[in-house]
Length: 270
Length: 288
Image (cartoon, rainbow over all chains, first blue to last red; front, side, top):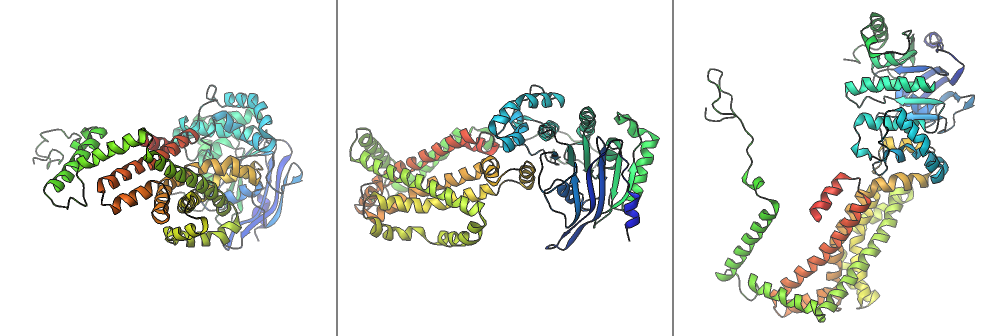
């Protein structure tokens, strides 16, 4: 019955072959009797930036957890680089709303943590050089030996970005990464994110409930319906890159925002 | 109208500015406040003594107590029988504490980390914890004799529960995000325990240890009351039976130093290991 809606969402990425492929992914939490996701089809083109937008509780985070291999789908299949996702994988980088840095580790020790967990202390030690470069990339040169308690919210999220990038993942899954930050910092961090992603030609999926954030960052925005979550519409964002915050006052930006807003359930964004 | 903080109806301007008022108690330094309170307490005590409000047989004067503190202190310094008694009790306390920490940590791991522990063991621990633990003292005496072992056992038995609770609570301290992050890193259960749950639970663990430092002294002294021996508890019992109340007070004060000393040691170690936890830093400053 919603085949039509699914068909309307053909992959329309910027370039490249599909890296991530989801076919008919559904999720039902039997115990809580919640139908969270309904036949999601999604394909991420290599080097593209895709956003999924929806109101709270529409299943965005569930989708991300399934893609990250943290949660098995009830139905459907998830492929990354041609191989099915059966659990957490090294080629998936993930970031959450909270930086979740560990206060007993310095910034650089937090960055190399994924290496330490996967390959041991020695590998982590030899990854320090790469960690230095990453901290440099996000503008935190000189903060290597600082403990998280001395970092601001935005700085902490930048360290979290480095930690995500240290394993050189194929795709980045971002779960409202900057929504805990104040608006000024958030805008700035979004631009930083764009710069980092463009520099590394990263394939990114961003989950957010901010329309402006989705539009300014993405090549393609999927609009998700209320529970059970399914894709209502895919909106291609044809603003030129690199994007800047000035574009937010561009009439075309406004059109795109309105188009997305019209697809979202009314009342969810009051 | 005279209240400076009340904005008047609008027809008259406020006559003064509204300023923060610092209360008297906030203006005097903490140490002075503590000393003043102590002096007040001693004055009330002395008054109660001088005016015969309480029988002099059961209530010594502050001065008598001070003299006895000096006497016992002299005995301790010169290595008299007091010192060997204090040493006995210290040994009981330290051994009891170490056993409580070790066993408490292991049970805490069992209860906090395994489903079996949480489901099957925990209810029994709760039930045992609800028992009046000092009532086990005669049992420990009959099992372990009148020597130091029965006191160590009772001290450890009483002190072990806060360690278990602290450890188990600490293991649950990691939030959903942190655990999810470790899962995305492909972390094994052991790695998650060592690199996430144990470090993040340290503040809870140390809170449990601090409770244990207080309880372990209680256990040792009660053990001596009920099982004899050569420690401070026994000296207190003897002094009380002779109505030597200044001595009882004096011994209690020295015993409290034992508990405080252990508490400070734990706080010092915590300060070193959990340097990243703000609250604990603050507590350590107050403790020291």
